[in-house]
Amino acid sequence: MNLGQRFARMATDVVVRRPVLWSLFRRPLRRTFDKLAPVWDQNRSADAFAPVDAALDALDGAPRRILDLGTGTGAIAVLVASRFPEAEVVGVDVSERMIQQAKRKAGERVRFQIADAQRLPFPDGGFDLVTLGNMIPFFDEVARVVARGGRVLFAFSVGAGTPIYVPPETLRRELTARGFSDFAEFSAGRGTSLLATKH
Image 1 (spheres, rainbow, N blue to C red):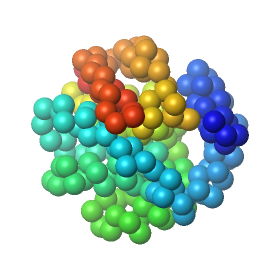
Image 2 (image 1 turned 90 degrees about the horizontal axis):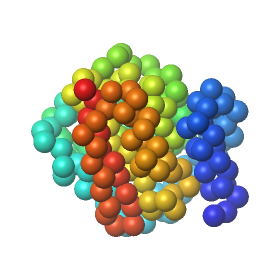
Image 3 (image 1 turned 120 degrees about the vertical axis):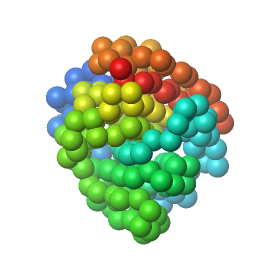
Image 4 (image 1 turned 180 degrees about the vertical axis):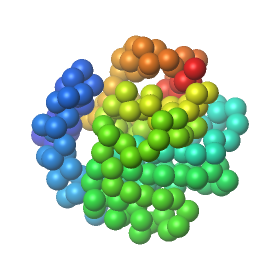
Protein backbone atom coordinates (compact mmCIF):
# COMPACT_ATOMS: atom_id res chain seq x y z
CA MET A 1 0.00 0.00 0.00
CA ASN A 2 1.12 3.55 -0.61
CA LEU A 3 1.28 6.14 2.17
CA GLY A 4 -2.29 7.37 1.66
CA GLN A 5 -3.68 3.84 1.70
CA ARG A 6 -1.75 3.03 4.87
CA PHE A 7 -3.13 6.14 6.53
CA ALA A 8 -6.67 5.12 5.54
CA ARG A 9 -6.14 1.63 6.98
CA MET A 10 -4.73 3.05 10.22
CA ALA A 11 -7.60 5.52 10.52
CA THR A 12 -10.12 2.72 9.97
CA ASP A 13 -8.55 0.47 12.60
CA VAL A 14 -8.37 3.27 15.16
CA VAL A 15 -11.86 4.67 14.57
CA VAL A 16 -13.55 1.25 14.63
CA ARG A 17 -12.00 0.65 18.07
CA ARG A 18 -12.44 4.22 19.38
CA PRO A 19 -15.04 6.19 17.38
CA VAL A 20 -14.39 9.29 19.50
CA LEU A 21 -11.00 9.60 17.75
CA TRP A 22 -12.67 10.27 14.40
CA SER A 23 -12.18 13.98 15.12
CA LEU A 24 -8.43 13.46 14.59
CA PHE A 25 -8.89 11.90 11.15
CA ARG A 26 -11.92 13.72 9.71
CA ARG A 27 -10.12 16.74 8.30
CA PRO A 28 -7.10 14.98 6.71
CA LEU A 29 -9.30 12.27 5.18
CA ARG A 30 -11.75 14.86 3.86
CA ARG A 31 -8.86 16.80 2.26
CA THR A 32 -7.51 13.59 0.72
CA PHE A 33 -10.86 12.64 -0.81
CA ASP A 34 -11.48 16.21 -2.01
CA LYS A 35 -8.20 15.96 -3.96
CA LEU A 36 -9.04 12.51 -5.33
CA ALA A 37 -12.60 13.36 -6.39
CA PRO A 38 -11.84 14.39 -10.02
CA VAL A 39 -10.01 11.11 -10.77
CA TRP A 40 -11.79 8.75 -8.37
CA ASP A 41 -13.87 6.91 -10.97
CA GLN A 42 -10.89 6.41 -13.29
CA ASN A 43 -9.04 4.40 -10.64
CA ARG A 44 -11.87 1.91 -10.02
CA SER A 45 -11.60 -1.67 -11.27
CA ALA A 46 -14.32 -3.14 -13.48
CA ASP A 47 -15.39 -5.60 -10.76
CA ALA A 48 -15.37 -3.12 -7.87
CA PHE A 49 -19.11 -3.48 -7.24
CA ALA A 50 -19.41 -7.23 -7.74
CA PRO A 51 -19.68 -7.83 -3.97
CA VAL A 52 -22.42 -5.19 -3.72
CA ASP A 53 -24.37 -6.88 -6.52
CA ALA A 54 -23.97 -10.27 -4.84
CA ALA A 55 -25.44 -8.99 -1.57
CA LEU A 56 -28.26 -7.11 -3.31
CA ASP A 57 -29.20 -10.32 -5.13
CA ALA A 58 -29.84 -11.90 -1.71
CA LEU A 59 -32.38 -9.29 -0.59
CA ASP A 60 -35.89 -10.68 -0.25
CA GLY A 61 -37.84 -7.59 -1.22
CA ALA A 62 -37.36 -4.05 -2.45
CA PRO A 63 -36.32 -1.46 0.15
CA ARG A 64 -38.27 1.81 0.04
CA ARG A 65 -35.63 4.12 1.56
CA ILE A 66 -31.92 3.55 1.00
CA LEU A 67 -28.94 5.40 2.47
CA ASP A 68 -25.46 5.07 0.96
CA LEU A 69 -22.84 6.11 3.53
CA GLY A 70 -19.47 7.33 2.25
CA THR A 71 -21.02 7.57 -1.20
CA GLY A 72 -17.97 9.15 -2.81
CA THR A 73 -18.87 9.93 -6.43
CA GLY A 74 -22.18 8.11 -5.96
CA ALA A 75 -21.55 4.85 -7.78
CA ILE A 76 -23.19 2.55 -5.23
CA ALA A 77 -26.08 4.97 -4.73
CA VAL A 78 -26.70 4.96 -8.49
CA LEU A 79 -26.41 1.17 -8.57
CA VAL A 80 -29.05 0.64 -5.87
CA ALA A 81 -31.28 3.29 -7.47
CA SER A 82 -31.19 1.34 -10.73
CA ARG A 83 -31.89 -1.94 -8.92
CA PHE A 84 -34.81 -0.45 -6.94
CA PRO A 85 -36.37 2.25 -9.14
CA GLU A 86 -39.25 2.90 -6.73
CA ALA A 87 -36.95 3.57 -3.77
CA GLU A 88 -35.88 6.92 -2.39
CA VAL A 89 -32.07 6.90 -2.40
CA VAL A 90 -29.82 9.27 -0.46
CA GLY A 91 -26.02 9.35 -0.70
CA VAL A 92 -23.87 11.15 1.86
CA ASP A 93 -20.18 11.87 2.14
CA VAL A 94 -17.97 14.10 4.25
CA SER A 95 -16.12 15.29 1.10
CA GLU A 96 -17.75 18.25 -0.64
CA ARG A 97 -15.93 17.59 -3.91
CA MET A 98 -16.98 13.95 -3.97
CA ILE A 99 -20.59 15.07 -3.55
CA GLN A 100 -20.16 17.60 -6.38
CA GLN A 101 -18.94 14.79 -8.66
CA ALA A 102 -21.81 12.54 -7.58
CA LYS A 103 -24.41 15.21 -8.37
CA ARG A 104 -22.94 15.79 -11.84
CA LYS A 105 -22.99 12.09 -12.62
CA ALA A 106 -26.29 10.95 -11.16
CA GLY A 107 -28.74 13.65 -12.14
CA GLU A 108 -32.00 13.78 -10.21
CA ARG A 109 -32.47 10.09 -9.46
CA VAL A 110 -30.44 10.18 -6.22
CA ARG A 111 -30.32 12.92 -3.58
CA PHE A 112 -26.78 13.67 -2.42
CA GLN A 113 -25.69 15.73 0.54
CA ILE A 114 -22.62 16.45 2.64
CA ALA A 115 -22.85 14.73 6.02
CA ASP A 116 -20.59 13.16 8.61
CA ALA A 117 -21.41 9.48 9.12
CA GLN A 118 -20.65 9.84 12.82
CA ARG A 119 -23.62 12.24 13.24
CA LEU A 120 -26.17 11.73 10.51
CA PRO A 121 -28.97 14.25 9.93
CA PHE A 122 -31.66 11.57 9.64
CA PRO A 123 -34.35 10.25 12.00
CA ASP A 124 -34.11 7.00 13.93
CA GLY A 125 -35.11 4.01 11.82
CA GLY A 126 -35.38 6.09 8.67
CA PHE A 127 -33.96 3.58 6.17
CA ASP A 128 -34.77 0.04 5.06
CA LEU A 129 -31.28 -0.46 3.62
CA VAL A 130 -27.98 1.21 4.48
CA THR A 131 -24.98 0.51 2.26
CA LEU A 132 -21.33 1.14 3.04
CA GLY A 133 -18.77 0.53 0.31
CA ASN A 134 -15.13 0.82 1.42
CA MET A 135 -16.32 2.99 4.28
CA ILE A 136 -15.34 3.44 7.93
CA PRO A 137 -18.42 2.28 9.88
CA PHE A 138 -19.85 4.14 12.84
CA PHE A 139 -21.87 1.25 14.24
CA ASP A 140 -24.02 3.25 16.64
CA GLU A 141 -25.21 5.57 13.87
CA VAL A 142 -25.76 2.70 11.44
CA ALA A 143 -27.90 0.92 14.02
CA ARG A 144 -29.80 4.12 14.79
CA VAL A 145 -30.85 4.91 11.20
CA VAL A 146 -31.70 1.35 10.09
CA ALA A 147 -35.37 0.51 10.59
CA ARG A 148 -36.41 -2.61 12.50
CA GLY A 149 -36.33 -5.41 9.94
CA GLY A 150 -34.04 -3.30 7.75
CA ARG A 151 -30.72 -4.40 6.34
CA VAL A 152 -27.16 -3.12 6.34
CA LEU A 153 -24.70 -4.00 3.59
CA PHE A 154 -20.93 -3.64 3.98
CA ALA A 155 -18.78 -4.13 0.87
CA PHE A 156 -15.01 -4.04 0.33
CA SER A 157 -13.98 -3.94 -3.32
CA VAL A 158 -10.75 -5.93 -2.94
CA GLY A 159 -11.55 -7.76 0.29
CA ALA A 160 -8.85 -7.59 2.93
CA GLY A 161 -6.65 -5.63 0.51
CA THR A 162 -9.04 -2.66 0.58
CA PRO A 163 -7.41 0.30 2.39
CA ILE A 164 -10.62 0.98 4.33
CA TYR A 165 -11.44 -2.55 5.48
CA VAL A 166 -13.13 -4.11 8.50
CA PRO A 167 -12.87 -7.90 8.97
CA PRO A 168 -16.15 -9.85 8.95
CA GLU A 169 -15.65 -11.07 12.51
CA THR A 170 -15.46 -7.44 13.70
CA LEU A 171 -18.56 -6.52 11.70
CA ARG A 172 -20.47 -9.47 13.16
CA ARG A 173 -19.40 -8.70 16.72
CA GLU A 174 -20.24 -5.00 16.56
CA LEU A 175 -23.54 -5.55 14.76
CA THR A 176 -24.64 -8.38 17.04
CA ALA A 177 -24.12 -6.08 20.03
CA ARG A 178 -26.55 -3.63 18.39
CA GLY A 179 -29.36 -6.04 17.58
CA PHE A 180 -28.39 -7.34 14.13
CA SER A 181 -28.43 -10.98 13.07
CA ASP A 182 -29.06 -13.17 9.99
CA PHE A 183 -25.57 -12.53 8.66
CA ALA A 184 -24.65 -13.52 5.14
CA GLU A 185 -21.19 -13.17 3.61
CA PHE A 186 -20.40 -12.98 -0.10
CA SER A 187 -17.31 -13.11 -2.31
CA ALA A 188 -17.51 -11.74 -5.84
CA GLY A 189 -14.92 -10.34 -8.20
CA ARG A 190 -11.96 -9.53 -5.98
CA GLY A 191 -14.12 -8.30 -3.13
CA THR A 192 -16.28 -9.33 -0.20
CA SER A 193 -19.50 -8.14 1.36
CA LEU A 194 -21.65 -8.80 4.40
CA LEU A 195 -25.41 -8.39 4.84
CA ALA A 196 -27.19 -8.25 8.20
CA THR A 197 -30.74 -7.64 9.45
CA LYS A 198 -31.76 -5.45 12.39
CA HIS A 199 -34.22 -7.13 14.78
